[in-house]
Length: 119
Image 1 (tube, one colour):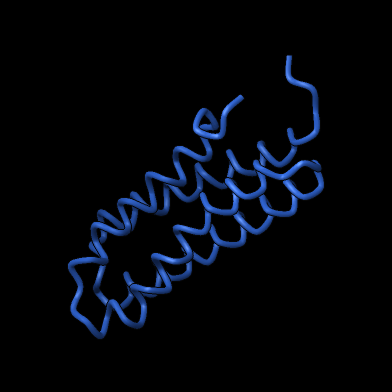
Image 2: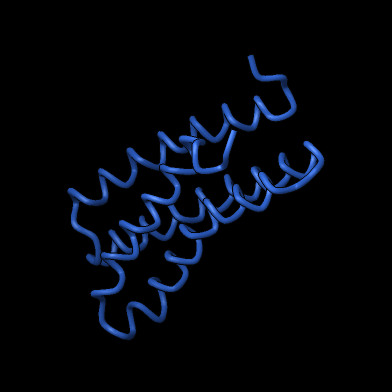
């Protein structure tokens, strides 16, 4: 299987791009404070999956997947802060929360599957 075929990776890439399109429109102060942190956290979800996927040992892949999960929850925190500070609409915020929950489920399932033989 290729990295690009993993649904959790695809979803992680998509949410990061959606976040980027919102943050890029913010004013300088907001981008420099919340924006940079939010984009970095969102980008790290897929980046850590990639790094783990490329590792030789299953334990390393698992560790990077845990880092990815940490970045997922960090992204959620920055989204809450952005929403509380009126930088993200209620509609976008609800969509992002749903996507984060979905990625979380997929990521946990992926972590459980690491090292098991595929059928």
